[in-house]
Length: 95
Image 1 (cartoon, rainbow, N blue to C red):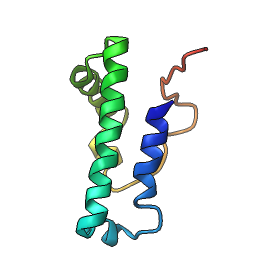
Image 2 (image 1 turned 90 degrees about the horizontal axis):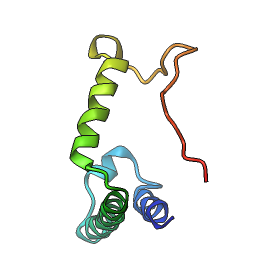
Image 3 (image 1 turned 60 degrees about the horizontal axis):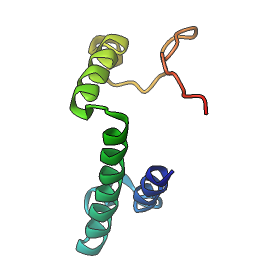
Image 4 (image 1 turned 45 degrees about the vertical axis):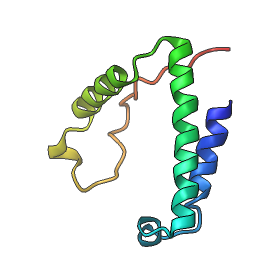
């Protein structure tokens, strides 16, 4: 799927950079990142259009789910995974 290729190209822009370097891109690198971000957005918008997904509404719903799953009081300052036995609720499409 073209979306995954474009996302990989975006990530590639940062592959060997430190967080500090990533935050201070030169003009050429920043322009390359902008182009890759635009490609990702365009493919995502097209996919949403084809599938009839309202992206802002889907993002709001997902943020509400995440707020319940990872309350700030338990999640702030940690990158630990949720306790064992907890499911992500993720469903994958069968092709």
